[in-house]
Length: 362
Image (cartoon, rainbow, N blue to C red):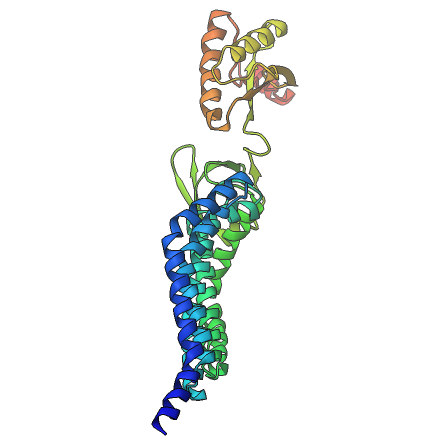
């Protein structure tokens, strides 16, 4: 009787034991040739120019050994004569481990792909998203992956997830209402980066005509700096809805317009020639397109000329204007060209009665 029971048990456990040895053999073979397999896969990826495949190969390769053991354990449990409840618990444990490994692997792969992915989303422009916004995207995706993993694990163990979903929704609504202003600024920053309205280092002309340089696109606000090193901090929600001009777009050059006044006694042709010569000899002024000069107004006390010249880079704008103004003062003195001051001539007329009174007094 005992022999019959032993034979029956051996027959029942024969398939699981055989599969256990098969799993161990496959695991050992793979571990032995692991480095060579990885080397060959990377070699073929390089031959066929498979972009970003190296990251996926390395990540999958790191967890292949675990996957062999997991699938082997699943099949062993499936073939074993254990009670159904024990098999079910074992299957659930294996599925849970598999989900955790899969989620961690996906998170690692995404971390390698996040920077190129964000560049593609924002139009192929490097550093389109600030570090703060890129970090939020990373953490949000990681949180989503692990939250999804938790949901699946709870479903595997037949745990009711209604309370979790409801609590998450309520918490989201409460946080949204409490931090409405903050979220508005954060999403405003994402809108600025996604639309490529401007980026750090760009020069902007604000609605009031003030020219500023973008020093930082933060999580909630944009930091601007004026030419006199004054820092202006504006919330992203306002910046995303403000009318402004990006002086670096579409090309990184700018036009300098300088008004110069001369007296009516000046030789117009001589003034034009002198101003063009000054512009051409000024550093960072482009020769093509050529500087241009226009007589734009016959004023009350002076002739007004406008000098228009292109600058190689917007960041040199104020230096170029200052240099031209200094050269104009010096050159005009050498050429005896007067820069007039505003003058007023007042004509005083007295009534006839006033004249007669003066005569009678004499």
